Image (cartoon, rainbow, N blue to C red; front, side):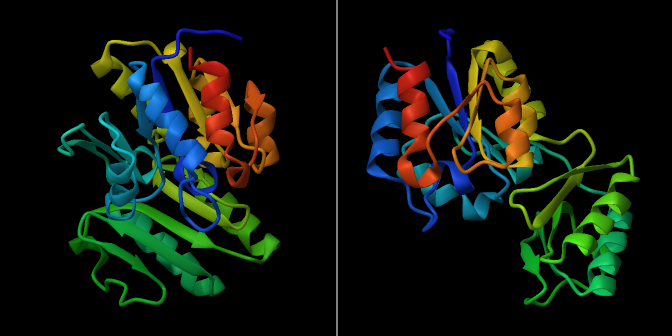
Length: 247
């Protein structure tokens, strides 16, 4: 499968990053070579900017950046292009669900990142909410909460691991954000290679010209992908870049 790939979109956790949250030298080298050959390499992550910026800067990536699953799009100069919030009514509902079932929970807001172990804001409506997440070890409780959230058409429900649930505003996902970046770069989605491992990567893997699942990816992601690369511990990103992008 040889396509004119001009943009490489990489998830971070479980994809670009090893389990210790570092980037392997092999991945760094492949990314650098791709950029030297004129390809744009972009991170598309569920993390907020605060927890993505240092790694992106260390790789000297010179293009756009997608954070909080597409909730924010940043320019190459790190200026905010677009931001989409979740209505606070839904955040109040999700917090009630988390407290009722005693699950771990967290959220990304414009004002900061909060979780069960920090002082979670009491007045929900005073904040701008980008994403809400649960981590639930109990399969039945996780299924129940997923089903309740899926009933709300204003929400986009995915995950970034087998035990968590991640919630954005409806229509907000990595593929939708990448389409907007493609428009700015004057390229087509068919010229994108997207690489990821979880359900929050599914949309971009399905809609890109080449969708690559990591060897450690969830089964649904592997089934949707055009190709399955090595795991995040075995430099799967580098393998995909060498196979589909580099001259």
